Image 1 (tube, rainbow, N blue to C red):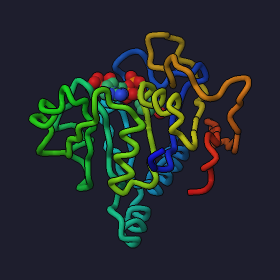
Image 2 (cartoon, rainbow, N blue to C red):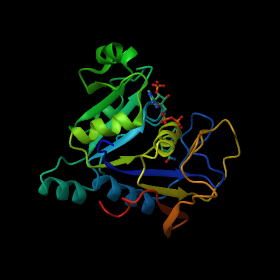
Image 3 (cartoon, protein in one colour):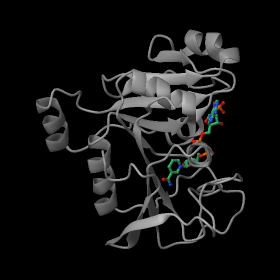
Length: 230
Ligand SMILES: NC(=O)c1ccc[n+]([C@@H]2O[C@H](COP(=O)([O-])OP(=O)(O)OC[C@H]3O[C@@H](n4cnc5c(N)ncnc54)[C@H](OP(=O)(O)O)[C@@H]3O)[C@@H](O)[C@H]2O)c1
């Protein structure tokens, strides 16, 4: 098997397992203390990845927020924030999205072969558009990231992307934050969709840590033998 980055999946969800509300209003799940923890994890990674729907819906900047953490990275010879990564089939991303306009670091867009020309037209001036194959698989994407020097990858969602990393057995660690609220609307995006996951009643995942953070709780799962080795 080709080499791939140590991969941390990070996600906040409601008690009933949703990532967001069903309407256009972004649902605040995390709290300040947890956002700071997420910032520290970001700062420890070489790349951060989100799916194209998250780029469109949330318009995230995906930068390290704390100046001290950015300074620390620079002192270690790294860019202030990790490389940003997204994946798309339809290539319907706006070049003006914060993903592309904020920060001077590398931005990678993995696109299906069929639409890669369209993606280059639209995004070629603001990002490196990579032909991710047909279809784009997270295994191939992970191997390509490794070849580009990414040794530690943080995947911040959404559910479609998390599902692929988990079902393909490509996640080493899961940081699952449960927020004290219900969404109660099955039209909302869930943490994961349908699929064959490597963990079941016969093969339970290893719960490595439980940490209350103000009103949310972090559940940290070890998902591979590589857990803790990075
Ligand atoms: N609570 C949290 O921690 C958290 C974190 C992140 C996001 N979210 C929420 O989650 C929601 C979005 O999640 P989501 O599950 O709907 O979508 P997502 O995982 O963010 O993105 C899915 C999109 O990514 C592209 N994609 C994924 N896999 C692909 C593949 N193998 N090949 C080609 N393209 C691929 C496709 O983009 P195209 O449609 O462009 O082809 C697909 O529609 C938003 O509401 C966001 O607010 C919550």
